[in-house]
Amino acid sequence: MVSEPAVEHDDIERAMRAVPRREFLPRSQRPFAGQDRPLPIGRGQTSSQPTTVAAMLRLLRVPIGARVLDVGAGSGWSTALLAYLTGPQGSVLGVERDSRLAEWGAANVERTGMTWAQVVQATLGVLGQPRANGWDRILVSASARALPRALVEQVGYGGRMVIPIRTSLLLIERLPDGRTRATEHGGYRFVPLIEDEADRVGERTDK
Image (cartoon, rainbow, N blue to C red):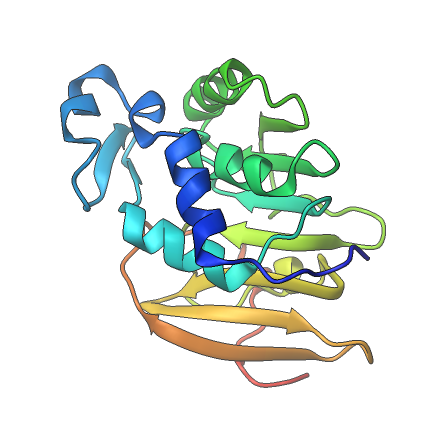
């Protein structure tokens, strides 16, 4: 488990200046990069509005050196932002189900030069990317109908996951005793998360 220094709002603002949204948009959408609204990136997906992304990153509190999973990486913008926050001491894996978006997102992240981050096509039938000891942080940028069990199980001890459930933004924390704690943090709208029925926990309470 990584140490957890406080993540200041300035860190998020610095990340968003260092990793401009414009570079992760289709050419037709780049003139609108500065607008605080979702923008289409193709294949039925969007680039979330910057204030929403910033709110999620503040909840996630990504420390330097963290091992981070980005579910629904799309254009790779969120993956690159996470990589900026972890620094080269950390590692970030973005997974994207759509093969064309995954290829484009991977190229976008590669251009940033942050070699500790990558975007790959998600494994068919697998939600997230299970790893030994779990992830320190998980960011989910698509809305699930219920809390996915498969993703909760991938949060490491002391880790955090930020995920939209329907229209509510949830923070999931893995406590030292292994229980999980879920808290709601406002309402947002996201594209739907593609998931298997068996992956849903169905409750938002401690377990």
